[in-house]
Structures are given as C-alpha cells and as structure tokens.
Image (spheres, rainbow, N blue to C red):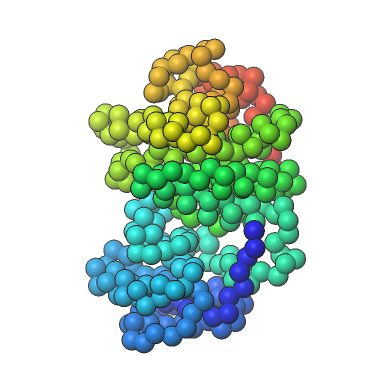
Length: 350
C-alpha cells in the first residue's frame, strides 16, 4: 500500500477553536491552506486533499459543505473530522462526500501521516500500513453491501497478509493502539475483532491459510449491521425487545447475502452466521449448542465479545483488557473453557 504525499492540502473549519487545533495538528505539513467555511465557498482554489471539520448537525453548515464538495469533486481524498463517535455522525460525513472519517480527540495528532510519509516511516509489515489498508477495503465492502451490491472479497483478502505480518512482528497491543488512533469510527469494532481474532490464530500456531480465513471472517462478521437502522445500533442503554429482535437479524442478513458470493468460503459463512451462538444454546440466530458450533465460530465469538468490551462507544468507555478477559472467564456455560484459557495470551499481551 502506498501513502500519498500531498502537494496542497485545503483545511476548512467553521470555528476559530477548530481552526486552531487543526493548524496545530498540521504544522508539520507543507502547503496547507487554512480557510473558514465561508471563505472556502467564496472561490475555487486548487487542492490535492481536502479536510473538513465542522458541525454536521447545523443545517446551514451542511448546505455550505455540499457546495464545497461540489467545487472539489476532482479531489481524490476528502477527510472529515468528527467530534462524535456515533454511527450517525460518520454516516452523515460519508453522505456529504467523505472518503475518510476521523475522530477529533484521537486522530488529529496522527493526521499528518496521511499526507507526509517518508518511506522509512511506513515499512512493509507495519501496523499502520495494515490498518489503513483494512479501513479502506472494509469501507468499500460495507458500502457495497449496504447498497445491495456484491462485496469485493478479493480486495478484503488482499489485506490479510499485511495484517498477519503486522501482528506477527508487533503483537496485538500495537494493533489496538493504532486502530484507536487512526480508525474511522464506523469500522472500529470490525478492525478490533480482526486484529484480535488473527492474533488468536497466530498464538495457536495456525497455518497461514487458516489465518487468512480468520481474517476474512472477522472483516465480514458484522457486515449485516449495515442493514440495521442507525438509531438502533447507536441507542444508549437497554434495547426494547422489538429493537433487540431487529439487531439479532444481522447475522442472517449477512449470511443470506454473502452465500450468493462464490468467493466467500463455507467456513467464513459459518462464522458470519453463528458468531453469536453459545455452547448452552442461548445464542442466536439458530440456537445451536455444543458440538453444533464450529471451531471458527467459537473463536470468532470470543474475539467479538472481547472486541465489544474493549471498544469505546459514544455511550460507554472502553473496558480495560484485564477486566474484559475476566468477563470471558465468567461465561463458563457459553464459551469453550479451553479456548478462553488459550485466549489469555492475546487478551493480556503487552
């Protein structure tokens, strides 16, 4: 994966405070034009990359951004900085024309790496390279799925070896740190689970082909949520029974769509459909139990639960990894004890 060096960056904000913070973050970059939103719409000026940080809840601001994007349709990369971790904020940004969505509190300090990257800074096999590649391909896959198109499995598979290499060389702790610093909010969970599941496979000594299967299963495991209303996905607190029933449809939604794709292996389909099944038969959607649940589904379930616990959401803080592993240890009737015990090497790795 190659990282582009920008010739000219246009940074657009709607408040002095946002402008100040963005200037501080981009001070190492050359040729940055800093404009407020009103200035940016006054006249067209050349730009290779566009950064927008503005209030996406304000109607006037949204109209102004649409005008700005219309004037810069030829700009290949359009970065939106958001303050809100919710799916709604990132979905709004993508709807306005974003190609990348970054969290303000986490990604500003790393923003220059998108523009000025000496070859020595991103080496082959680095976590940075693997995460950035995964974000792009996961975004493409999710958008295709949401629109009813076919997921480009080959492109997702192209991220497997960089991910495996990065985790083999650097371990899971570095992966989690980079995802939290560079992630696009919509894809945080899938990226966390991908790193955790692949590292789990590495710790078990699985062969490369099996690691690639785990990678694809993790990247696709929650893609069915692209068809679930955002208001349910991002609802803080307890879901109503009807809302819970809707969200529990996501494994079947994904399975039914992906089974028509000849590039998706049967074992990946199995993990996508059954990563919420429990050994005691209390999971969903098929209420499988015991030996009915495959090894890949059992492993994906552990990684999925752990990833959800250590993920920060708009309505909850990230749980420390030691505490999250403790939760897994308490799920004695639902998860395979031997696998949970083996997972300790991943969960507590430093």
